[in-house]
Image (tube, rainbow, N blue to C red; front, side, top):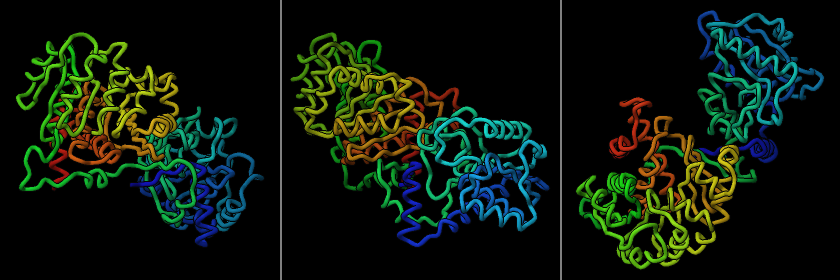
Length: 510
């Protein structure tokens, strides 16, 4: 797993490296500036010029070091110090003096030569500590960077693009859009979460000398990026002497007239993700339509009709006998008793449960029912469903994704998968994982049903929460990425992911 640090945590890590491990702050800046210069060189065209815009803080000091390394390499470089030069940090002052030793004096950015194709602009105006929108001369400088980029110049940002909030990934206005962002030491939330990730361009993390030990000193939430190896290594080995009972039996409570496809997609995804057996429990009138999707799907008819309620408890408890995981929610007929039914069912079973779609909407009416659960529970809301669970707006959820997911997981003692671009997996123990796979082509009906099926299958095979959730989310997104290469983003549909999952498992077996 790759650690992701907030601005405060990054400062704590730097302090620990300096005080506990003897790493001078000047050497950290030197290493950062060298990496920034190398990234800038990689973007330049033949004969291209480098324009370095530096703010008065340590981020500007990184830019001054980069300018010096570029000059040492014989490049054509112009440097501008933007803002009050009297506010330069001590390290930035020292590096300004070193730069002037090369004969390069900073200029006002208003008189800098225009940049275009082949040229590179180094954005070192603001770092991770920005708390408000850039104003005055800084806003003008960011606007100039945007103009140069439109003219064909490439932009490399020091740590985060200026104007981007490091912890929330939300941009102020104005904000730099970079082609490459050099992440110093550790990646930040702005590099991993949207819309910041898109504004960062290609993120290149570089070691500046902090070392992994420095993260032990940081406080606050633990945030990580899921890596493919971590997801792949969670899968159980398929033994030669195994049989269908070896890999678990998933019960899927889903579907209703007009929504039988949701139940079928959950079931098929579970089968395509290694579950030995899958049974769908749904109303009698919907069951034949669900089972018609595939002969591998087994079914059990729930007696009665209409919304699921407390009268269905005994039938569901009977259906759960001998099962290893429960997936409940997609397409179910929901009524005023559905939330209480789910609470009673969770209180009567110890197998892991995945709640999605209308199961989430049902428990949103009284979240206390989740605290009755005997076994581990996984919630898989999209932002709208999370808004109903949280009692806020979807816009609020999107603006505070990490905090919302973490609060839900810790307060209810559940694992939360908050779906969307860069899906989050939040643990009850306080860790949050950012998933890097997936694409905009997956913004279509049914992809969440497929994810629920993958989660159920991995849980049935004995992978514990939340590791099963991390693996399922990564594999699901990767399946979408692999299929998008074949079908394009525009034409991707949920059942394409069933094919994509096969490509994922083949890739991981190799």
